[in-house]
Image (cartoon, rainbow, N blue to C red; front, side, top):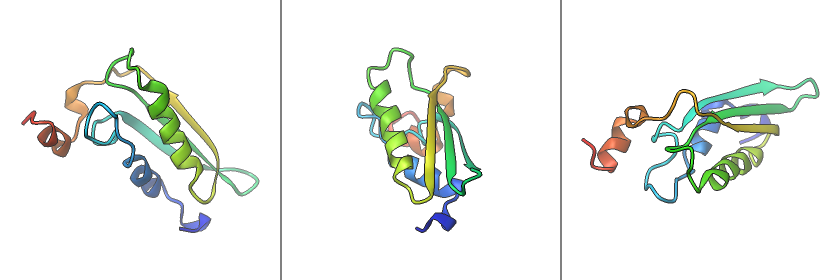
Length: 108
């Protein structure tokens, strides 16, 4: 992918490669990523802003997951700035998972 081909969908696809080590489902299908916005910068670069949450506020993997998301995005061609924020509103619930995630975890 060259920098001109960078899209929000490509970023979502990259974030989908991040897995919570305690749950065998990617964080997008778990419903942990609330938004992903790609913004052009005046110098021609691109900034990616992500808002995500965790299954619980006390999750011991918070820094690991956040850092994994940030490093994957930062490595994408054309990305010059990243901001990954952990948010707690709205609180995560199992209803936020995709049907595929619920099937994978035996919740359906």
